[in-house]
Figure 1 (spheres, rainbow, N blue to C red):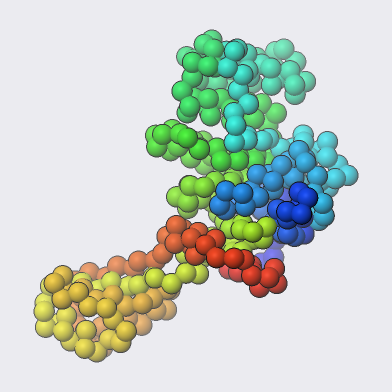
Figure 2 (figure 1 turned 180 degrees about the horizontal axis):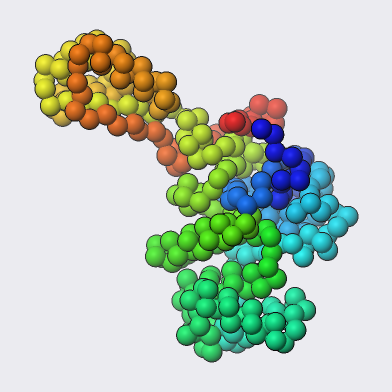
Length: 323
């Protein structure tokens, strides 16, 4: 099934951006279905923040087109701004005023009435577990609290699309998991999230679709599981307790790696259903019983390093999309 433009929260084609003789974006395409999490991965300097700044109207692209929430990025920039929220790498929280005052300031910027502003502020402070700290200066907040306040401020205008640019950088593991839960709740409520991150487990946990940006081009795109199948290293592991069965399997199966001490065999595999069925059918036909079968696939770290460690090929061959 092909996704139509009406179902896309973000549809960008051929985005280009250069600074002097340095090409930051070399004609990238991005499609994000409404109500999903799209994650953009890439090393430092890959252009992730540039993409966010372009799609959120903060800077102009040198070339390409984009529609955000159905609005043309250039011709209808004001309508785009009304439909989105942005939480950048650096907190927008003013530490000199209280959390509540930060929220009310955002309500004023969105032209809410005093009554609406106070109602929305109270609801969001409660939702993000900040009610007790609401009257305290934001400078006294922990990193996780400031990040929660940051996103609460972003939600004052009820945006349909939220850009989160490395939202958990510098947070402790507990605060990161709290932020993940907040993102999941936003998406379950119909919000679209465009997430940039350097934490690969974050993209793995949250994203419906991931694109890897390197050297100004998107070099691969797909779900986390699809991307993991792009790099070698996947295998099926068979463990035996019966040395005879182990020897029979080791002798008959091809391309296996033996571990005689633990009686385990590793068979190269992409982990597909067809490959697993073939192995199980062979074991049944040979009347050999493995005590344990497990599938091991490369993780996103392997994908990231494989795709960003070497120079990027020409744009026509650099992008590997998994459907």
